[in-house]
Amino acid sequence: MDPKGLDGIPLFANLSKKEREQVARWADEIDEPAGAHLLDQGRLAHEFFVLTDGTVEVCKDGVEHDRRTASVVATTPVRAIVMHSREFGAMRREMPTVCSQIEDAIKTRLAR
Image (cartoon, rainbow, N blue to C red):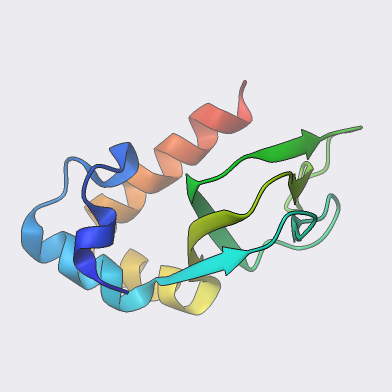
């Protein structure tokens, strides 16, 4: 994806230009129509999403460990940044500080 696509996204705000460029190499930008299931509760997590445009509905009916804790369905067309587990692992090895920042943000959101 284009590194400029990460500009203005709070999750990546503290990254240097070089770090954003590397994250952009690992990430893809996707467009999904309204009604698309981005995540399904109970499924194993193989990627993470950062919604950059559009709206979604989050449906949660229980707590699960090491699996998706909610289903997310687009209610309008959405654009999102997605990084798969292999690329996230590469980021963990090569940019552990950046990975920690993202994991902290994920934990904060899960606690809500």
